[in-house]
Image 1 (cartoon, rainbow, N blue to C red):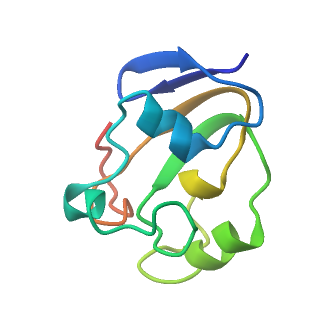
Image 2: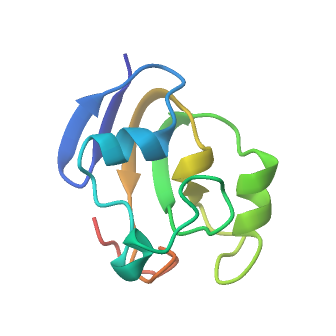
Length: 108
């Protein structure tokens, strides 16, 4: 079972598990500010669950790629939408500042 490290916590999940669901189930504060209330609930349209991931995850799907190509995100940045990402191996997840997680400073 893959190990996920995020916000100073470590936990395991099933291979292929949805990263957004795994993080929320394990008490990780995935959303910044009011994005906790105003988000697309995992359908890949808002971009507020953008995170940086080190480790083995699924390839970006079209929703992930399309949303991150639209401001305030940029396709040149190494971020992924947690709601569109499956965990395939051990990973470390980082969240950045700003409403959509597009800031340059790490939140965690």
